Length: 306
Length: 239
Length: 85
Image (cartoon, rainbow over all chains, first blue to last red; front, side, top):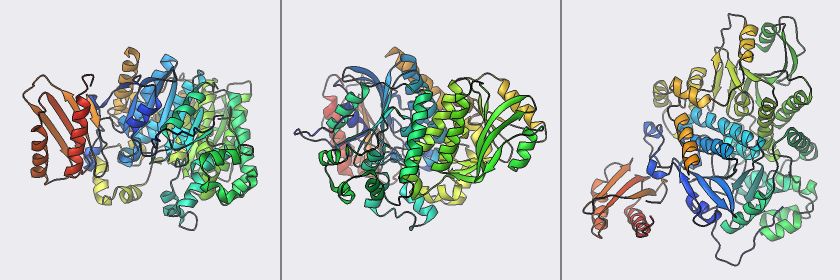
């Protein structure tokens, strides 16, 4: 799969950018048409009950565009608004987009940036996530791809992590984190000995972009740079893997093998050691090029098994 | 209801379902007439990476068979297992895999019906009961995203205030009735009646597209979702 | 139409739309922070003095300070100078 772009142009951080800035940098210039944009004022009907301010797009920007000349439907979550969490309207916009993608036979690009379910509308958010998963599977079963891009502030947690696991391919950067239970949630429920959420290096070794890329939890590792995400997305869209039973059989074998091979590990660095990475302790400090070079021969790949 | 009692009601003529380490596997002839595959989570267990991959394996082996027997998913779980091990191994992929297996089984012609007879929460709920075509429940079942005291902690609202708000809207508080109103639960069964017959009746209905948002609008628990999704589809068509 | 900012702590979003009434600028502010009306009025008075007729501006406030409000308004106005907006 793709390599990271090392660029000499001015770098725009994916992590720092807003959802709208990410879309503008990712998609072909001027090609984006938004659906149910802010002027429609479809805000959350539930946040006011909690005395919380609404956002006109409910924290997700959706529409159609071109990406490398390829017609796609795209969605971007705004991680700064309510932690990018799924509420009723936010979730329904993505459900609608995925259903529309199936009707139009288009690929979908999801810029995930989410803490999971928005607790103020938890039941609606949980159900939306289930509907999104079903719509992704329907779309993929028709032969279309769903590409996930992860490298935002809020990470990709809770049901968002499960959605990520349903995508055809995932592109991730170092700051990207993918997990179901967040660090604070694990610590609150199981204690600091089980999971020290304040230990940032440990958190990244457990669920960060590099760990996910090394173990096959992500397919492409790129710089925290909008042009790198764009290049990787264009390259990824060129491939095609319809979701079939044999893909899931391959995933079954892949995940079982992972448990067998790394199940005893207590830390990401032990997993990398077992993978055969020379000097695993140096992995977190490596830049993208160094990291890809040092690991490409040993990393687990999920190609056609997701 | 205990799983033993539930199984004896569903399979009066016997079954070969086993419950091991909180996981449910096997099969039986529902009401003595309809062969079904059975998987599930029992005894209020957490669902972790090992459990998810074991359940997925059973779903895939059912799909590999030639008969398109329904898959019955019995659920009395807690949330996803929260641990360093699970996240280090990539629990998100394991839960996604289980959900995809169930959804693809449905696409291959297996009816997938979940019966929630106890608790379920968060990621475990998404990967099991909510990944089936039809979700049935027994009275007393308790689905939740997060319990109210935890929601109070995260939202920094007093528990009393939250309880008051929960009485006014089904959108955030735990419980079967709230989830039913949002459209998650197709039907709540009558435990005093013939359970096998009620599940058989649900199985006799043809599978439909995902209509949970429309159901949520009808029942008032999700006022906007169906309309929003439909509007997006319309805008996409005319764009 | 233009949209700037996000609804987050210390930030706000402002939606700019054109209207037919060239003589008026209508601003709606939705905020959970109470008691800052004089401050909002002062910032908005400065802003409309720059000639903002024919605009409807809708603000969702996450508790932004006056300098942030002024910045977002200026950004939005700049975007609206593009005739395509």
